[in-house]
Image 1 (cartoon, rainbow, N blue to C red):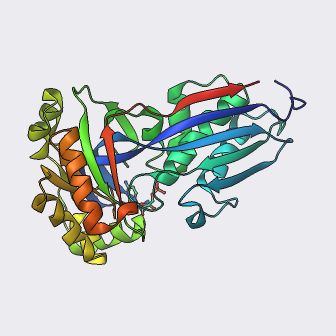
Image 2 (image 1 turned 90 degrees about the vertical axis):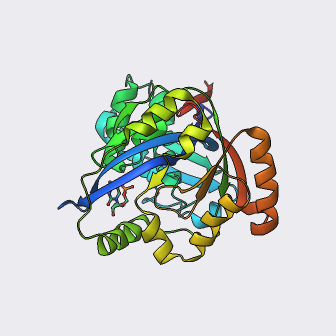
Length: 311
Ligand code: C5P
């Protein structure tokens, strides 16, 4: 492909959010990260990203959708950084450019890897737009340079994450789980939650993924899974945001099988027995929390996917 391609060439991709079914956190490392042992699940809440051919060297991003006012469309935007990284590593002497349009459906700073999803989407969309011969593993490797949570949305499904959460092994599970999400108007800063974790737990165990969780995923039974959900960051997030303890408690009160903080929060995920139970719970929670704050999703869903290529 050359830099003289018509400007209306574009690629549209869809990228899922994630929740962590289990998140075990080890001690802080010298590089500022923590060793994790986590199980990610991709859920049916998505960002869509369209990359359109632009003059050489030009990478700009525009975010639209309900969360657009909380995202800075500047050089530091993760989608922009992802496109630039791809260009620097595989670009033909800066012959390419891209305009990125991000339609955000994933909450910002919600513990669902929304920013990471946009980086993942930009990598996939620009690789297709620029016709790069890169494998999914190549894209995930580049993604890990941008953030610990970037590789997972490229893979999707359910996967164990170790090291910083960026070394992934897919989990073979069965069934489809129905979740209700309680979103928050105000985000939580991931580094702040990890820092509070360090203050609250000065000698954490080496992180591991519980065998029972993997066995429960093998059964495909929500009732089995419910007993194995766990997030080591819960106490830290609730310490920073005391209202979260009440939200977590609402699930049990209104019939969820389990309540779980998603990643570093503040999104809370409620596991339900099935679709109709999820509908009932969502209805009740909407009354408690407000209409915009509650979403029904299912998981696992596939990772970042090409929806349309216009040439
Ligand atoms: O990699 P990413 O930029 O998404 O991580 C954001 C922050 O979350 C890190 O700077 C670090 O403070 C914290 N973090 C961590 N250990 C991890 C992942 C993230 O401490 N494994």
